[in-house]
Length: 89
Length: 227
Image (cartoon, rainbow over all chains, first blue to last red; front, side, top):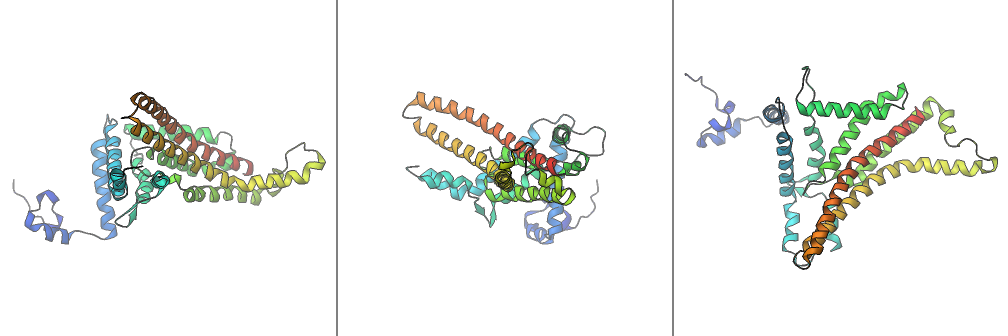
């Protein structure tokens, strides 16, 4: 199987070698349009893999919600850490 | 101690972005758009069924001119119910506990219904200020009372939603703290408190759904009078 040469900026992340990482990041599109299209692609990948299937169960949405809880915890960590160390609540 | 219980209602900032931004954008992600296919996936089918049922229910008493508001009411209901239910997950932030947000929903929509009424049928709209069959002597007082009642509607809408959700969240936090602290001391009481907490969580789920519904229902009522 002969691979066509793909330019560095268009390679997928898993195909980029470690020493090429900086150049790869420099070539990516970080404009607002680029970021939006990246979010859209990510959303489409997740949606088509877990939700847009014939017998989709609760798992697709449940993973999203658990991820949301995890991100909220991360966001609030600086605030919540005082509750752990407090003697009297 | 008082400060720590109300801390859950402050939106913490991380990397300069407040958590409320994430909480407000999450409902957009959870409801995908129906495709032009004949048979969609289960999530979209459920979602479509729910929206259809709800819109049918709300718009039954409204005349044809009010049906222009269908998209707005359906999306408002969906947004509120999602925000309320997501707020019940641990560590999440509920934007509807902020009075500013609820006023932002209530005041423009209520004002729109009043202005539409005044523009299209001013006599009919003003006629709502005086119920039929009042004794003549009571008329001036009643008009004042009805005007006050009209102007207090947006405030009531916003404060109802805020107060219900805030009180629910506070109760959950208080009872959870009590159960947790009592666990090493009096285990039976702690178990009873845990049962209470479970029942309260069920109530909160119901309240979350009901409050969203009541908000939109009352708005549709105000629309019905005026359109």
